[in-house]
Amino acid sequence: MTKSIDSLNWQDGFLQLGNAFFTQLKPTPLPDQFWGSTSAEVSKLIGLSPDWEQDEQNLKILSGNAVLENKPAYSTIYSGHQFGVWAGQLGDGRAIHLGTVQHDDQTFEIQLKGAGKTPYSRMGDGRAVLRSSIREFLCSEAMAGLGIPTTRALAITHSTAPVLREKLETASVVTRVAPSFIRFGHFEHFASNQQYDQLAQLADFVIETQYPHLKDGEDPYLELLKEVISKSADLVAKWQAVGFCHGVLNTDNMSIIGLSLDYGPFSFIDATDLKFICNHSDSAGRYSYLNQPNVFHWNLVRLAEALLPLIAASDDEAVIDAKVEILKEILFAFPKKYEQFYQEAMRLKLGLPQVENALVEELVLLLDRNKVDYTFFFRALCNVVDRPSIQTISVVKDLFLDHQGFDRWLQKYLSYIPSEQASTIAAQMRRHNPKYILRQYLAQEVIEKAEQGDFSLLEKLQTCLKKPFDEQPEFSEFARLPPDWAAQISVSCSS
Picture 1 (cartoon, rainbow, N blue to C red):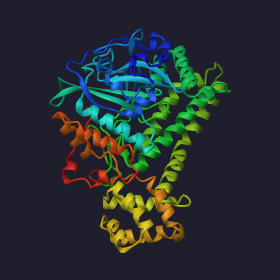
Picture 2: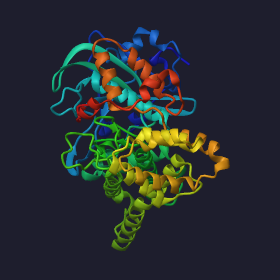
Picture 3: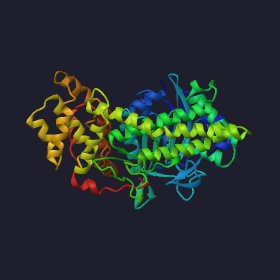
Picture 4: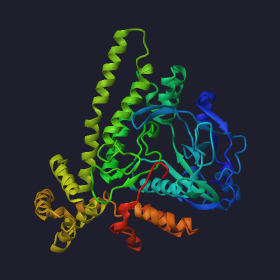
């Protein structure tokens, strides 16, 4: 373990791909910088010692005020579809990569989000504000606590430097960590520009670094797509099961290794609403909660199109046609694969001995019609299974306007739960139904205090969200139902 970021085990990583894939640059210094928050778990993950924050140079590096020795920072180029429309060239408009580190036989890319303009910032200033940095920091670590694949957040550094968004705010930088930040859009960029050598180079790099078991296969590019489809189906199933809505599922926000990537206008559902839209910029509801699996499927088709020149690299039309048919078959299997992951996740939430699709569907529709708080319901249901009584049942039943509908469902549901195993099943259910999630109103309360210079609530909520399935009575205030004003919180892409 090392105290210095500069002394981590830095590797060439993405830099070995060459100049066609990135632009080298320096971050823009952040004046009057200070620590907002850090993650002890992530610092340990990359090889930093517990006292690493005491090194003033680390604060400077993560604020863009100092650079690593002999290791150039860079921003990557990619393209993509945004809201279903081809947007052409994009790239890291607010992200500057410090590079790749290796620790305990694992490699991690480290990047600064909000460290100034890059060649891909377009009309933006390349900065992030404290509000958005806190949301990303908290959600990254909250998702990790939930066991959902995600990028991580090492630190927030803050400043009094003004940044203009909808209003005047203050600048902040969040340090993000992941095995890879490569997106579907990286592949789309080189495919759309017919840069097939670079496309193959990128695919080979991903296989070598993230899917090494594929590199000696007969058709590694096809197998790569299969792996990404499976990981993506599993990821979105986990989102749906926990009630998470991303908000901007453009192809450039999709991870090639199946991570939750780019936390902008995200939200966990409070009152169950299958048509819930968390991004007020999404007027058509393309990225609604209900539509997320369909959007994943659509984005995977775009990835398959980008990989087609590699998968069907042949002058023989018959060979190409055969590969296209294989691709169609693989892609058509996505909905079924997703449904299998989702039903299994719901089986675990309900403690069922086997998947019961009809029972799950009936429940979800009942929750939606009655606008029942999603997280609170499932956690309270654990108590019904554990100790079925008038009191425990009433707590859940009172969430519904349709009492008779709930009674019918509950009677059917409890018939699947062997009474002699009820306590064991309830304990298992609590490991799949969080008591604590990052509700919008909690994030808002943290932001408001932090904007006044008080980061204590951020630290407290961060600690709670590390163990969302535990009772943690000292944090019971974070498990209460949201106040009425929470429904009025509005988030957009600047969030």
